[in-house]
Image 1 (cartoon, rainbow, N blue to C red):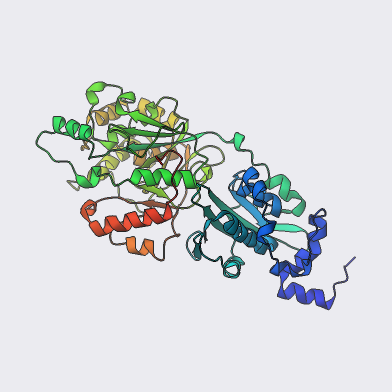
Image 2 (cartoon, rainbow, N blue to C red):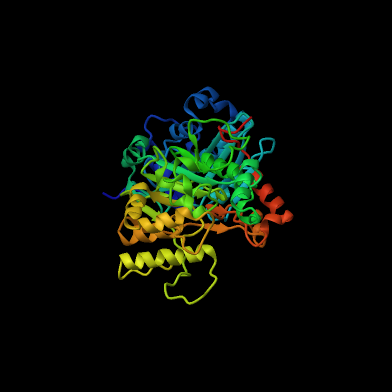
Length: 501
């Protein structure tokens, strides 16, 4: 039987569909909740005295919003506790709650959409423009809310929106959702598991060097008595501190973080149960191979770290996360690693060029090994300058197949023409050709002197991964270094738990 829909209701449907469906479904979806002025949901006011600070302190901001707005967890993976799925009819209420939390807890608030488009920042001592935010986000599929204050509170919430039609079907707007449509009665069961325990552990591994370390300088001088080191390759600009902050902020689900180095720990890094400092001596199979200043050699040994998880992400210290990341950015639903190849093929096994850059020569050597192993596979593409998703078992398997190449690379004190580059080339092609990894794409950019002004201005929220890669003398470019520091201090101002206070 067709329901009798009045002209007034049809007009409301056409002019304000969120209002219409709110009226239609509110009693059916939320039978235990009573709203005053429900005919004016678009103008819903949430006052500061409606914010229960004790409840927020007990539950946390994310759980408080979830329970008050009947949100679901994890539109993308079904369990991420820092991404919430909201009915679009509650957008106004969500933003008003955020405004009240800001005022009550003296919060700095940043809201932005991925890929750019819209971003706004409200320091704790500024007025929050709810109307502007609601207007800009009304048609968006998802957006990120960052909240922090001087008391050390930090919360990053990735918000996804869904709509409801007259058949009670919820449609999630984002194409990244693992399920786009379901009945409204299924929202809670599908998107409220938050089963973090079902995830396999994923570690992070860094390699780090500090050319200002006196002991490191002595090692260099004793090994290369009449040769200066390359400042672009070895200079430390506190990238590690900000890279670690970015993991704390945007990948809090990581299990352990290992830092591999032959230098002393920086003064700002306190002992922390999540971080383990690894000396080269702990992972190299022969002490005659040390000291080493060859990143390719060190990368050949990462899978020898004691207690390292089967799945781990390898980062250079100049990699910075600038948006929320999930395990699914690095491993698919079956546990295979995700490889982010460059779109162009720079490596060709038949190249006749001489004096290739050391990284390209290592890729060429690796490509030849891949061709010997897989007859019909041509490995040409470098991995992008973004974190490398690796599996310990695959690395051990590769070492068993190419033991001589691993040994020769480990013995080279600096990069040489006989190197292989395991983490940035060999692993990804070997794993892909073996069916152990998949390809994907990711928004990232290498930051250089010529593009940093664009990053600071209009592209501040465009990319998920940044690489502040020194080269061509950029380590001595004072303007570039200042711009880099200004950017990092602004985007990653919140200290991590392991930093000295």
